[in-house]
Length: 354
Image (cartoon, rainbow, N blue to C red; front, side, top):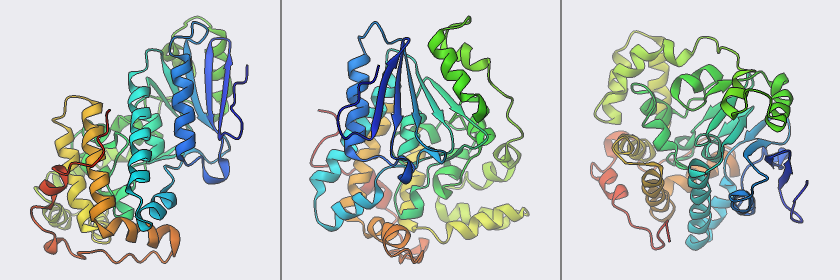
């Protein structure tokens, strides 16, 4: 049964006990706008007490990926035009959806096939059953635009093994399926050619009948994880007390990858790196996902309302596309030592949870 509202970018179907949600904006790799977030949440609300829906399946249209993230260009336009209310509305709505997926009373199965980044991780990372494929590319790349991981990303990063959370959050490194499973961002690797069979099994309720058991019928052992192989130098370097200390530790390591990572960090926003390091570490001590989302909401509004690097990062990557952002300040040594405390203490005009 198709239940699509008119002019939606979300396909909503209900068949054989499965509520199927498909992000349908393939030309933009299913990047999320406010309407898409609202439609996803509305479908989940409608199915919450529906006895004819026992499982929710979420995937993306097209061959390129589940979701490339949020509408970052739209965020740029809102900030430049001085519309903080619009910015707050989007993030509040998106974070409410992230929490709803994590807390949903029925199993949510997400097929993170292809590119799944930023806002896409907010959909996939908190689901009950998180499936990746040989085509999956997962990341929280916010520091590359002078921003900080959100959509519950710090909650996931803070629970990654060792110091992978700091590494992935600061560098925005892309994970393949093996990396994502090792880091705790995914549960099962299913070859993309078997995804239609998995969907059929979820609908027909073959024995075994739970979503996890059904997924295991198609699960393939992931190959070696590069992240796991690199844990020695990552855990050593990213235990540093500050971003500057991390860079220094990377420079002292003999591995070529460590030196390259130091080079990469020195191209990114010193402010974004400093805030991200503090946010990931503070998230480790938070009690639940909602607390992490509340922390992230304060941080993203702090960036949007007080910091030039977010607009500059989006300009360089997506507007002018010169790939030459001019960060302010430009060097880690010039970052205010109290800036992380300031950012984490920021209270938005509009609270996250009403």
